[in-house]
Length: 281
Ligand SMILES: [Zn+2]
Ligand SMILES: [Zn+2]
Image (cartoon, rainbow, N blue to C red; front, top):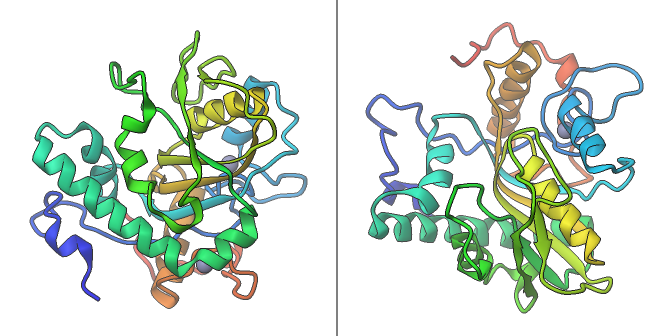
């Protein structure tokens, strides 16, 4: 099967950019946050990274409900995945936006098809899908079925036939590491419906978790977070660098491991010997 990315031309993949790596995201474990699957300090009494705990506090959550994260790719600022996930909605040329949206739809359909059993085991039945609204000023339209991510997910098997929960802007902003239960509001009661949140790029999760809080407050049950790109800056800290190298090494060994399988185990990041690998710059 040829890669959909050979026809993308997202950017400078072959001419000086950071190139395109379809890295998988490590499963929760040593050095990996159980909630967001991002890097965290290893040590006793910590299951979640600092960001996730801070956001739980901002949302007034006790942190016990942790919907599993299903993450298609890892990405980092400036790489082609990261650019693709921005340009499909923010790119200046509509023809290219449509092309990037089609590329993402193809990739997600394929990912979900290959991992349908893992995902169904992780999230259980899904009644509805909620698209995390874009934070771009002016990007919020009255009907979020217009969000391009809605067209990306609409015929993914696990949500085929599910309703789309519409989230409108609330009374407070949600920004980087600033979550709010009032950032978004669902239109109508959800009455125990099982909702899969869907987000294009997860950085700290403040926006996605604010949206999840709005779903919960409307009576929905958030069963999982489907994330196309789990963004990590490997230069941000030593643990982030180790996380990235681990993702790269494990992806090389098992290129299509979604991290949700119970049968395979990624090596613990804390145990890794990374001396033979160059830290990405
Ligand atoms: Zn976390
Ligand atoms: Zn899988």
